[in-house]
Length: 117
Image 1 (cartoon, rainbow, N blue to C red):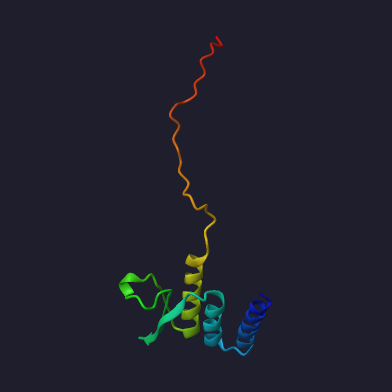
Image 2 (cartoon, helix red, strand yellow; image 1 turned 135 degrees about the horizontal axis):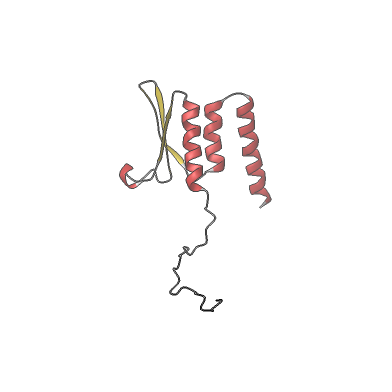
C-alpha cells in the first residue's frame, strides 16, 4: 500500500512541477492520468481556430456506442481541462443509495372527526 501512495505522491509532484514550469498541456494530460485513470484522450485536433478534445472511457468502441466528453477551446490546454472537468463531473459518485428512492403517495388521508362546535 505504501508503494502505491509513494507512486501517487510522485505523480502529484510531477503535476506540480509541470504547473510551475507552465507546461499547461502536459500538466492537463498528467492530471487526467492522475485523477481519472480510466479516461483516455480519444481525439485532440485543431480545426478552424479551435482545439477539439474528446475523452473516453472506452476508446475501442465506435463513437456511437461510447459516451465521450467532447470540448473545444482556442487554447489546447483549456480544451483538455474542460474535458477533464466534464469527465470528473460524471465520474464522481452521486450521494445516492444503491436502491432508488421511491415516493409513495399515501393510500388514505387523515381527517379530524371531532366536533368542536
